[in-house]
Length: 151
Image (tube, rainbow, N blue to C red):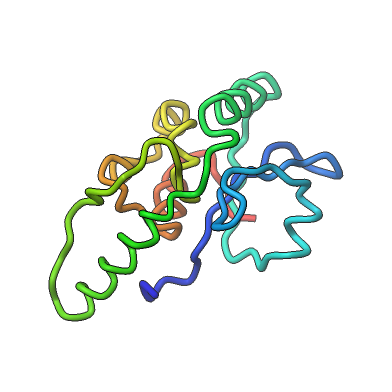
């Protein structure tokens, strides 16, 4: 829709058979699932490894669960993105999501629970402020983390 190569963002904690993916989906809201289950249902376009020690990863995982765990999907965000895309196709802009629902989130907003740590590592997540960050924008911002490596 935006002419970008990806349309969803999820976060994976750990690796191997016990890796857990956290995402927000249209029909489930925020959920966690085993990586193997996620991998069997999705095509992964981009993947970044951000090296963290076990205690950092546990702290960030807990922050994500505490802040966004169980929230519903932000359907108003879907409406906003549809309008934004339609307007951009005719050369107009819709600068900010006026319908943001703080009680629900879309996939990219999962990053908000990790924002401080990610920005300390070098990611620029300023577009999260206006809820104008697409999954591809998020990938580009996270790629700015010096220790991040594409996998």
